[in-house]
Image (tube, rainbow, N blue to C red):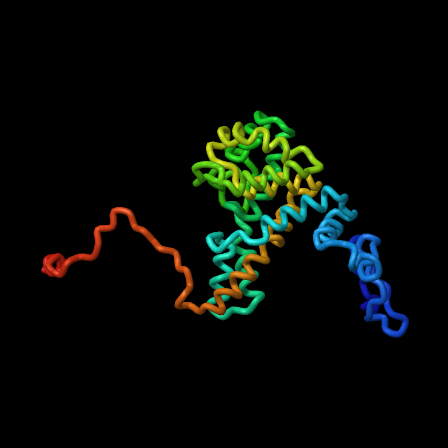
Length: 276
């Protein structure tokens, strides 16, 4: 058996050891940038995110766009399934990691989750600023010979709310803000063609669809967009989990269930008649 250690293969990170300790780091570089010697105090959080995933520093427009999107996604709110999952963990006294993992697991799906962003990004890129091409891509998802997937078939079009009535105000505000600042062409096209696309989808645009367009304009691929969407929504999940841990289970906001055509409980006479 060889006693040689296997090097870690990565283009992302490079470390130089201290002279007196090979296990301690003297310099850490991310894609060539000295993180502690040059980036600290100069780079923003979103600069580091972009650098890690894209391998290059963002321009001013790209950094501003990603920062605006990060603010919008930071807290989906307690009605979001991923945040509610984290709240369940918090109120039950679960560890911090458990609450965040619950949010990641529930928020990974194809309805308002990260996988929807993955699909929507593919749709925007396939459309190439052409509504008819987007229609063709959307139809391919339901084709009998579509590629088999471990994910269940999604109802409706990725990036649109199948249960929505009209485009929510916050979605319109987000799209307008991001499109005005985008260095790419997907967001401006989406704003211009949103009515036509919503008519084609038979549903209003949702935040996942806008986020997917922003990731496209930032140069991310679908896998990177999916990962970022999961990451950027964790602050809200963390905050609500901590809040519910402080409130306790007696103040936990359980969902109300309404049963249509509920016959109600049987009366004693009915039970006796059945027994007889």
